[in-house]
Image (cartoon, rainbow over the protein chains, first blue to last red):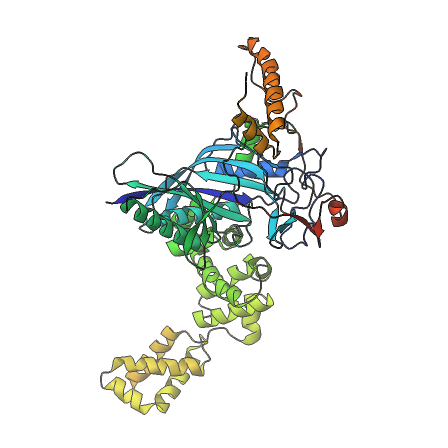
Amino acid sequence: MKYTATIGLEVHAQILTKSKMFSGCNAAYASAPANSCIDEVSIGLPGTLPVVNQEAIRKAALLGLALNCEIPEYCEFSRKSYTYPDLPKAWQITMYDKPICINGELEITLGNGETKRVGITRAHLEEDTGMLQHGDETHSLVDYNRSGVPLLEIVSEPDMTTPEEARLYAIKLRQILVFLGVNSGNLEEGALRVDANVSIRPEGQKELGTKVEIKNMNSFRNLERALVYELERQEKIAREGGTIVQETRGWDDAAGITLSQRSKEHAHDYRYFPEPDLPPLELSREWVAERRAELPELPDAKFARYISEFGLSKQDAALLSGERETADYFETIVATAGASNAKPVANWITGELFRLIKDGEETLAEVAKRVTPANLTSLIEVVAKGEIGSTVAKQVFEEMYRSGEAPTEIINAKGLRQISDSSVLSQAARDAIAANPKVVADYKSGKLPAIKFLVGQVMRATKGQANPQVVEEALKTELDALN
Amino acid sequence: MSLTPEQVRQVAHLARLKLADDEMERMRLQLSSILDHIELLQAVDVTDVPITAQVTDLTNVTRVDAVTSSLPVDAALANAPDRQGDYFRVKAVFEE
């Protein structure tokens, strides 16, 4: 029997804010000592009152709009009760039946080039929990630094049918989150966490099978691996006539398997109710329109525009549109160099610039201070005029990358301008001919490609400052003059 | 409305209360009579009353995203039942 898989993802994304969701406590806890980023609210002391961080609301709405969600006019926080030491109040403030974003979608591009829409059920704001560490056999240690960090939970429809689709969805969602500056995109640090709900059913059956939740996948690769494993596990049970149990399973990376995790609360009874300490949010249509106006052009739109407007290759368009910083940099340079020069600009950035950044230790922002729009534009113009060849241009680029000097200054200071004096080239051609009688004889006997060797000799003699095509012409003239 | 012992046990579990059998029965009777009292409200006609979870009429009470001071770790841990280094030390959670 063949089975159809149904996969939905729940992504928890920490929102990049300076302070926490409900208090002014420092939210930058990642490398802070234990319990150094806490205040009365984040450790849930009695008598404290939460107050909503407006930046978290703004960023949640931005993400929602980027995913084509509706932003309801009325939105409300609720209490979700559960007793566990990582929640100091014994409840989590979250959004339950009135979330901030509903009914969106995300389009992914599959390996075969086809696109697929994945529905977004909802995205809601909540507070992150503290972190438990193993103490000894009878005790755990709690660090509340993470407690209260703003968290956006983005829930997809169960629209995915393969592990690959799930991975592509997660990658795309991350790209948008990071592009908007909503989230750092750091899976390893847990700033972005992906859980999957997965079930199988016999092909053709309408009714969905029993759903299993998988957690603990800290990379996109592991998300895909865990789903592949889990689908095989479920199919094996189904084929053998067994029953798939509704449960939460954790991905064990080292073993490459999912393992049953007994749930925190035996029977989940969250007893949600509207949070009495937080007045509801009324999001006016004007406010939502302002947020919409704030949305930058997103990677997909940039990708399409770079191809249609600038004629870039798909590969270059993808490399330049995926990250905000790179896209902004590319567009700033094109604004100076002109749209007609967009292709060489793209070539320089995706070629030499990326290579040098990869080999070095600087970020694009630092390098951009030296490889300025004026500098790169000037280099492109000098090449277009034929003043320097492509090999020398790379040398000039690297020099500009290191020093920030203008290309023309580098060219003048190092005497790199291409030799255009025909008498100099003719002399160099005659010298090469005189020094290589055997190659000349080969050429004369009909082995025409032998001239390439002589071109190489002239290029070497002129330290790469000659135009190879002009050199070849000069050599032909000189060789034809021989009898 | 009369609660069953099972319902009382469930509520006690959710509240993390350990009740002896006689306490359980006492709670069952007391909780049942509280529910009976609340049930009087069922008689009120609320057809035209909008559902609300709030009585303050406040909306959009928010703050600017700015960092204020943190609590010194020793102050935060001062009333903790137990500490180890700068961590709160709690009983390990045993899975059920």
